[in-house]
Length: 219
Ligand SMILES: [Cu+2]
Image: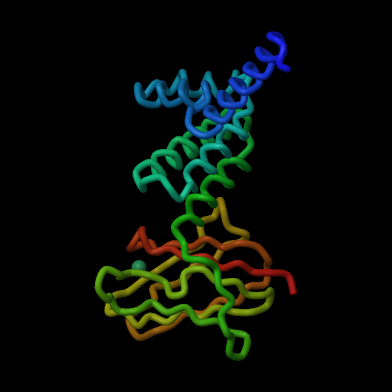
Protein backbone atom coordinates (compact mmCIF):
# COMPACT_ATOMS: atom_id res chain seq x y z
CA UNK A 1 0.00 0.00 0.00
CA UNK A 2 1.15 3.51 -0.77
CA UNK A 3 1.14 5.82 2.17
CA UNK A 4 0.46 9.51 1.57
CA UNK A 5 4.10 10.45 2.18
CA UNK A 6 5.34 7.82 -0.22
CA UNK A 7 2.89 8.98 -2.85
CA UNK A 8 4.15 12.56 -2.63
CA UNK A 9 7.76 11.40 -2.72
CA UNK A 10 7.16 9.43 -5.90
CA UNK A 11 5.19 12.31 -7.41
CA UNK A 12 8.07 14.68 -6.58
CA UNK A 13 10.63 12.34 -8.18
CA UNK A 14 8.50 11.98 -11.32
CA UNK A 15 8.06 15.76 -11.54
CA UNK A 16 11.79 16.29 -11.11
CA UNK A 17 12.52 13.73 -13.81
CA UNK A 18 10.26 15.51 -16.29
CA UNK A 19 11.68 18.86 -15.34
CA UNK A 20 15.24 17.70 -15.99
CA UNK A 21 14.24 15.88 -19.13
CA UNK A 22 12.51 19.00 -20.41
CA UNK A 23 15.45 21.25 -19.59
CA UNK A 24 17.95 18.92 -21.21
CA UNK A 25 15.95 18.67 -24.41
CA UNK A 26 14.58 22.09 -25.06
CA UNK A 27 15.34 25.09 -22.91
CA UNK A 28 18.44 27.16 -23.34
CA UNK A 29 20.57 27.75 -20.30
CA UNK A 30 20.21 31.01 -18.42
CA UNK A 31 23.69 31.96 -19.57
CA UNK A 32 22.96 31.36 -23.26
CA UNK A 33 19.72 33.34 -22.95
CA UNK A 34 21.46 36.32 -21.40
CA UNK A 35 24.31 36.15 -23.90
CA UNK A 36 21.90 36.05 -26.85
CA UNK A 37 19.95 39.00 -25.43
CA UNK A 38 23.16 40.99 -25.26
CA UNK A 39 24.10 39.86 -28.77
CA UNK A 40 20.74 40.93 -30.19
CA UNK A 41 21.18 44.35 -28.63
CA UNK A 42 24.72 44.41 -29.95
CA UNK A 43 25.80 45.10 -26.36
CA UNK A 44 29.42 44.00 -26.58
CA UNK A 45 30.18 45.27 -23.10
CA UNK A 46 27.50 43.05 -21.59
CA UNK A 47 28.69 40.10 -23.69
CA UNK A 48 32.26 40.36 -22.48
CA UNK A 49 31.11 41.01 -18.91
CA UNK A 50 28.95 37.89 -18.99
CA UNK A 51 31.82 35.76 -20.23
CA UNK A 52 34.54 37.18 -18.00
CA UNK A 53 32.54 37.22 -14.77
CA UNK A 54 30.48 34.15 -15.42
CA UNK A 55 29.75 31.76 -12.61
CA UNK A 56 28.86 29.30 -15.36
CA UNK A 57 31.42 27.24 -17.20
CA UNK A 58 31.72 29.00 -20.55
CA UNK A 59 33.49 26.08 -22.33
CA UNK A 60 30.66 23.76 -21.26
CA UNK A 61 28.05 26.25 -22.47
CA UNK A 62 29.83 26.58 -25.83
CA UNK A 63 30.16 22.81 -26.23
CA UNK A 64 26.47 22.33 -25.41
CA UNK A 65 25.64 24.80 -28.21
CA UNK A 66 27.84 22.82 -30.62
CA UNK A 67 26.08 19.59 -29.65
CA UNK A 68 22.71 21.28 -30.19
CA UNK A 69 23.85 22.57 -33.59
CA UNK A 70 24.77 19.03 -34.64
CA UNK A 71 21.31 17.64 -33.97
CA UNK A 72 19.92 16.14 -37.19
CA UNK A 73 16.36 17.34 -36.52
CA UNK A 74 16.94 21.10 -36.63
CA UNK A 75 16.83 23.44 -39.61
CA UNK A 76 19.92 24.83 -41.30
CA UNK A 77 19.03 28.30 -39.97
CA UNK A 78 18.89 27.00 -36.39
CA UNK A 79 22.16 25.19 -36.92
CA UNK A 80 23.90 28.28 -38.26
CA UNK A 81 22.45 30.44 -35.49
CA UNK A 82 23.83 28.11 -32.81
CA UNK A 83 27.23 27.88 -34.47
CA UNK A 84 27.27 31.64 -34.75
CA UNK A 85 26.51 32.22 -31.05
CA UNK A 86 29.04 29.53 -30.07
CA UNK A 87 31.75 31.21 -32.14
CA UNK A 88 31.07 34.70 -30.77
CA UNK A 89 31.02 33.31 -27.23
CA UNK A 90 34.31 31.49 -27.79
CA UNK A 91 35.86 34.66 -29.19
CA UNK A 92 34.78 36.61 -26.11
CA UNK A 93 36.27 33.84 -23.99
CA UNK A 94 39.56 34.09 -25.85
CA UNK A 95 39.65 37.85 -25.32
CA UNK A 96 38.77 37.49 -21.63
CA UNK A 97 41.06 34.58 -20.74
CA UNK A 98 43.75 34.77 -23.40
CA UNK A 99 43.13 31.13 -24.34
CA UNK A 100 42.44 30.35 -27.99
CA UNK A 101 41.73 26.63 -27.45
CA UNK A 102 37.96 26.96 -27.23
CA UNK A 103 37.73 29.20 -30.29
CA UNK A 104 39.85 26.72 -32.26
CA UNK A 105 37.52 23.91 -31.17
CA UNK A 106 34.45 25.86 -32.36
CA UNK A 107 35.97 26.89 -35.69
CA UNK A 108 37.03 23.30 -36.36
CA UNK A 109 33.55 21.99 -35.49
CA UNK A 110 31.90 24.50 -37.85
CA UNK A 111 34.35 23.64 -40.63
CA UNK A 112 33.90 19.88 -40.08
CA UNK A 113 30.12 20.24 -40.26
CA UNK A 114 30.44 21.54 -43.81
CA UNK A 115 32.63 18.67 -45.04
CA UNK A 116 31.81 15.21 -46.36
CA UNK A 117 32.68 12.13 -44.33
CA UNK A 118 36.46 11.61 -44.31
CA UNK A 119 37.84 8.97 -46.65
CA UNK A 120 41.20 7.24 -47.09
CA UNK A 121 41.95 7.60 -50.79
CA UNK A 122 43.93 5.07 -52.80
CA UNK A 123 47.37 6.53 -53.29
CA UNK A 124 49.68 6.09 -56.22
CA UNK A 125 53.38 6.37 -55.36
CA UNK A 126 52.50 7.94 -52.02
CA UNK A 127 50.39 10.66 -53.62
CA UNK A 128 46.66 11.23 -53.06
CA UNK A 129 44.68 13.11 -55.70
CA UNK A 130 42.20 15.87 -55.05
CA UNK A 131 40.39 17.10 -58.13
CA UNK A 132 38.78 20.43 -58.80
CA UNK A 133 36.11 19.46 -61.35
CA UNK A 134 34.27 21.53 -63.90
CA UNK A 135 30.89 22.74 -62.57
CA UNK A 136 28.11 20.16 -62.81
CA UNK A 137 24.55 21.07 -61.89
CA UNK A 138 24.44 22.64 -58.46
CA UNK A 139 28.01 21.71 -57.64
CA UNK A 140 30.79 24.10 -58.54
CA UNK A 141 34.02 25.28 -56.95
CA UNK A 142 34.58 22.13 -54.93
CA UNK A 143 37.49 19.94 -53.93
CA UNK A 144 36.84 16.26 -54.65
CA UNK A 145 37.20 14.53 -52.30
CA UNK A 146 36.98 17.36 -49.79
CA UNK A 147 38.00 15.39 -46.70
CA UNK A 148 40.85 12.88 -46.79
CA UNK A 149 43.08 11.04 -44.36
CA UNK A 150 46.69 10.26 -45.27
CA UNK A 151 49.85 9.32 -43.39
CA UNK A 152 52.89 11.36 -42.49
CA UNK A 153 55.30 11.64 -45.42
CA UNK A 154 52.57 11.19 -48.03
CA UNK A 155 51.61 13.89 -50.50
CA UNK A 156 48.48 15.40 -52.00
CA UNK A 157 48.20 16.52 -55.61
CA UNK A 158 45.49 19.00 -56.48
CA UNK A 159 44.45 18.79 -60.12
CA UNK A 160 42.51 21.65 -61.63
CA UNK A 161 40.08 20.29 -64.24
CA UNK A 162 38.00 23.43 -63.93
CA UNK A 163 37.97 26.33 -66.40
CA UNK A 164 38.97 28.90 -63.77
CA UNK A 165 41.97 29.43 -61.54
CA UNK A 166 41.99 28.47 -57.84
CA UNK A 167 44.40 29.40 -55.05
CA UNK A 168 44.12 27.98 -51.54
CA UNK A 169 45.74 27.95 -48.11
CA UNK A 170 45.36 26.25 -44.76
CA UNK A 171 43.66 28.39 -42.11
CA UNK A 172 46.49 29.22 -39.74
CA UNK A 173 44.63 29.30 -36.42
CA UNK A 174 43.07 25.86 -36.77
CA UNK A 175 45.63 23.95 -38.86
CA UNK A 176 48.65 21.88 -37.81
CA UNK A 177 50.96 23.73 -40.16
CA UNK A 178 50.97 26.13 -43.10
CA UNK A 179 50.17 25.07 -46.64
CA UNK A 180 49.74 27.62 -49.35
CA UNK A 181 49.25 26.93 -53.01
CA UNK A 182 50.33 29.19 -55.83
CA UNK A 183 47.69 30.13 -58.40
CA UNK A 184 46.58 26.78 -59.81
CA UNK A 185 45.55 27.56 -63.37
CA UNK A 186 43.10 25.45 -65.42
CA UNK A 187 44.68 22.15 -66.57
CA UNK A 188 47.51 22.46 -64.08
CA UNK A 189 48.30 20.87 -60.73
CA UNK A 190 50.03 21.49 -57.46
CA UNK A 191 51.48 19.08 -54.95
CA UNK A 192 52.36 19.28 -51.25
CA UNK A 193 53.99 16.70 -49.02
CA UNK A 194 52.86 16.46 -45.40
CA UNK A 195 55.56 15.79 -42.83
CA UNK A 196 53.73 17.14 -39.80
CA UNK A 197 50.82 15.08 -38.44
CA UNK A 198 47.60 16.87 -37.62
CA UNK A 199 44.64 18.47 -39.31
CA UNK A 200 44.84 20.93 -42.19
CA UNK A 201 41.74 22.99 -42.93
CA UNK A 202 42.11 24.80 -46.24
CA UNK A 203 40.06 27.24 -48.22
CA UNK A 204 40.16 28.84 -51.66
CA UNK A 205 40.85 32.58 -51.57
CA UNK A 206 38.69 33.25 -54.60
CA UNK A 207 35.71 31.06 -53.68
CA UNK A 208 35.11 31.24 -49.94
CA UNK A 209 32.67 28.32 -49.93
CA UNK A 210 35.35 26.08 -51.45
CA UNK A 211 36.84 24.18 -48.55
CA UNK A 212 38.76 21.00 -47.83
CA UNK A 213 40.56 19.12 -45.11
CA UNK A 214 43.59 16.85 -44.96
CA UNK A 215 44.20 14.77 -41.84
CA UNK A 216 47.77 13.54 -41.55
CA UNK A 217 48.24 10.58 -39.25
CA UNK A 218 51.45 9.38 -37.63
CA UNK A 219 52.77 6.31 -39.45
CU1 LIG B 1 38.54 28.48 -56.01
